[in-house]
Amino acid sequence: MIQNKKLFGIATILLLISIVVSFPYFEENPYGEEMIEAFGFSIMTVSGLNILALIGFIIFLASTYFLFISLKKYQFRSMLVAILIIVFIPSALVNLYQRTIATGIYALHYNEDQSYCEYETVDTSTMHAICELPFKNYSNKDVAFQIEFYGHYRSNGVGINSVMQHNQPYDAVVHANGQRNIRIEMDITLSEEDINFDSGSSTSVPVIIKSGDNERKL
Image: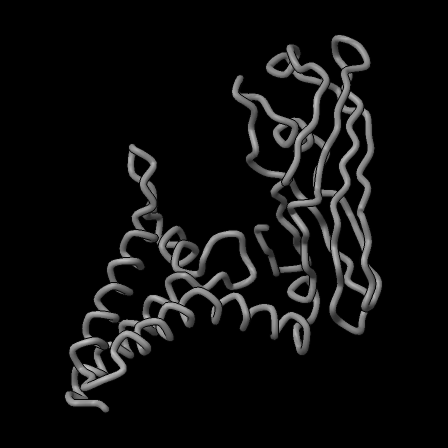
């Protein structure tokens, strides 16, 4: 079935590289983005294009091309398998690890789609905020950690997360093999920059969780 082992080897290496670039590594951003940003390089252009995603896609296309010309038959079946690998394997590996041997904050699953914050101005200088953040702990031990908010700004440049950052970090605990909606509720004194803040809500809330030297951006 393989007519050129050298080209098949190149296809395999390129496929592995594209998997590494897109590997989520327990973060909101793929592992490749985390590595590049750690060296101070921006992954976005002025137009908003994700450079790393483009590079990863080009590498994947190259891998499928070399895979196609390296085989005598079953080329399209093999390309379909490669597509399924790049789509499902990275997230499946993270999910398997998290459900089996992960410990601490790496055993926590954050359901961002069901998270939300509601806020209401009490007076011109005070805001009352309530956030519900659903977490599930897959480990056999309680996990204590801290929560910080980031990003998620409104169109006027001020968002619920920017205001909630005033009093962070927030302490939390999820019991062993347990699921918990962590509720954060407090009155926050608004600064002059936030004085025009009004009532509203925010969904799919991005957070950072920390425990000791470990940190995850979700």
